[in-house]
Amino acid sequence: MWHARRVVASLLLVLWWAAASADEAWRLEKDEDGIQIYSRAVDGWDIREIRGLTTFHGRLSSLVAVIDDPATGPALNKFVAESTVTQRDSDTRYRLYNLTRMPWPLSDRDVLNQREITQDTATHAVTIIDNATDGLLPPKNGLVRIVRSRQLWSFTPKGNGDVQVELRWLSDPNGPIPSTLINALSVSTPFHTIDRLRQIAQRPQYAQARLAFIAEP
Image 1 (tube, one colour):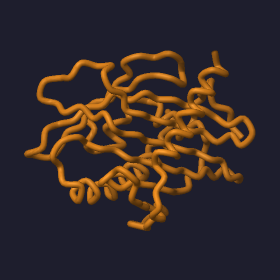
Image 2 (image 1 turned 135 degrees about the vertical axis):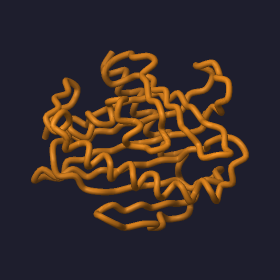
Image 3 (image 1 turned 180 degrees about the vertical axis):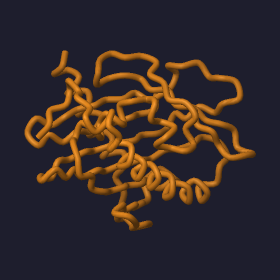
């Protein structure tokens, strides 16, 4: 069973990189407080893909514990109003429902993500992939369903207690929202998310977290 889950997750990761390939190189959009935010064009998308990088000094499990906890969703992203696990197959595979509040006059959005968490046994690097699903949850009145979205967190130990944090994000909010507005928000939002991740991971309940499915380097 575990081997099968790892194969599925690996296939999802391959599909992610293949779909996100683009001729344009990464363009630095912001470099502040040890966080770099990049963007690039992606074939077939008007919306740019975002890449965020930073370094965290602390335990690998602390970072994973924050992302794995649905309660931190609204704290990590100021637009997220609700984050709930709707179906859990295992500790490392589950469906996560997010409700996103959009600024007026835009309609609020929701998305049901399939999440996969894997760890490389050699490097101890952890990858968390969220892929939007379609047709698994009935639409809700007043909400626009996001069905084209993918997010990847990568936590790679670098020695001396340092962990490289990488966020890859490409999401279509669905509906008549100008791509220029989306691209503008796509810099400030991941910057805020990565900054908050570093802060929350230092709280005692996360700093000392022990996860059965994560091996510390």
